[in-house]
Image (cartoon, rainbow, N blue to C red; front, side, top):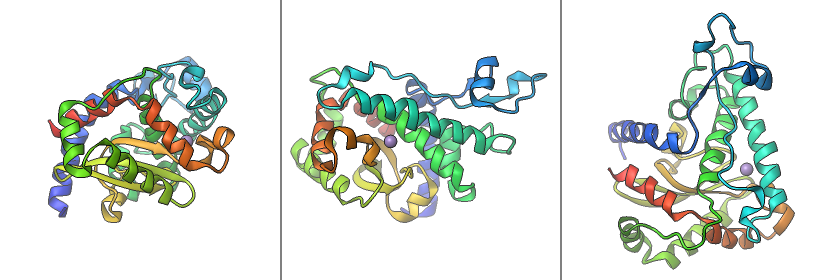
Length: 256
Ligand code: MN3
């Protein structure tokens, strides 16, 4: 994709993301007394309406809801400790800077110009907020007709997608994420290191740019308690708790 196409696509995705992120809890809450103390932010109490901070979104299910596929202790530590730390560190990194009022999507789009703490923790907050929404205890969700057609065209069917997605997840050395993205009118698989994601401007250069439809956390903290070194078993378990309704909604958003 050339630069002009990339910029055009990015604006389309940002516009779409403005709708989508309302459903995944990525919008900032107005600062209030509790969030000030919770995040220990130097907020001007005379003008509370201009002070914003990111907040840890509640999970849309109980920690144990994804058993036996994803275990309760991993879910609790992952959400209440790991994700919470990304949120707190992101707020600290943005506090008092000209970027403090930007949305996550706006930060991702210019992340190459921002401090590495914003890249790591902003990516961490975006990725995990998305990840929780992509999981569900409800069995039997399925790709929409339109998404299934795109999967058929690109991967020859669901089994082909799962096999190739699994390879992307296994090939990521160390910590990172595996992604299914929408880019240039079709589906693409790729992976990112650390907490980078396809919305980041840097991934346009590295080949994992696009609109993320689904992502899988392959940091060891996401599977080690239950699966130890067996990442492949964790990837397989993921398909049992994936919320295809959410993936389908994101695909509809990306292709609107
Ligand atoms: Mn994680």
